[in-house]
Image (cartoon, rainbow, N blue to C red; front, side, top):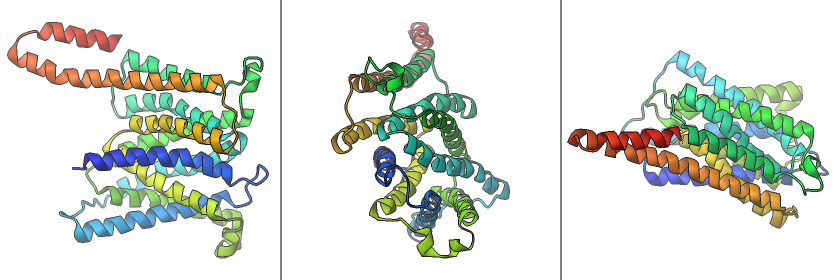
Length: 339
């Protein structure tokens, strides 16, 4: 059983590391371009994730209170390549998106994937989403879009980014949602050690990353100096950030769920907005704060409704056992869910 401290730490890490990705990537650009190979960033981050997961698995094996569970099933191992491939594509497309959008736009539009995640979550994981929760998810997306509108005189032309950036972000949101929901299905498919499951996932990540790097560099892929051309401490920090946000994501989807992960991305929006205003001279707008307020209210309402439903279940069970008040309580719960 995983402690609450580990779960909370994973969510906090998810917020911090998710907000850092856009900011660090933005900081690595020179005159709007990347002087290093973005393919190598993904390859090195996957290597780090695989090494860390293998190390943690060995520690669990050597010093754990009980032996870690390891299922050697070829078909299940092969299934790990699906989310690994989606993550590989998504992470590389992110570099193009961040080049076309500012950090705040990138982070706020991440919330679009909450809708796609909710749809996939409902049908792939058999999770109920009430009518009120669906409406709050749409309100959340509306708040995200509002926050990126320019001044009223600019109209829609005031949105900060290019058409390519916004288009790729929408497509990538769908791709990322598919990857994370499938990954949750994979992680919760059995009781194997999370470190062993991560090793399977990151093995394919390394495979895809190395293949893309070799295809791009050819024989120069054997030259470490060539692979790390243009690297500085900011790029190295970005590599580490990608590595540990991936590990934090695995913990969240293994022991919590994808909606928690996507709401963590929503919280990261606030962090990115504040940091961008303070350090990147982004001009704060009324629309930004209105959009952030709408997003915060929608997330709070969504979770309040879910907590109401979860809290009502024990009371409904107790009423059914006592035989008193069950009809009235069931009616109230059903009416609230339908609302």
